Image (cartoon, rainbow, N blue to C red; front, side, top):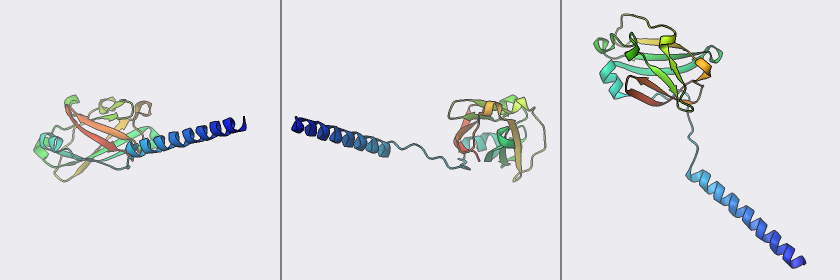
Length: 150
């Protein structure tokens, strides 16, 4: 009886070790993405079509607002950027697909100058965008993915 129990204990111990090894191996081969706050990929397509480069995304006002900054590269192309629903950037959470839209805050007109940085404030509806988590900025059918907000 004692030998059977020790063999069973040994088998269970080996099973636990094997399971742990498989799990550790799976975690090494499938790591969870590590997002670095402040990551801002560049979109040559958005720059070419709209004449702007996004430079900054941050959750502000204790989570209630989101600030998006962009630099004007080409003033002629950027002249109507953000003035109409079709050219207003959307920010989409990559975690759950929730979207914030600047039209909730109201669109605005302004004169743009090349090299200057401008900003857009969004109401962070339902806390859609979270600091340190990935988001997508979409303008029409063009997107900048894996933007990580401050």
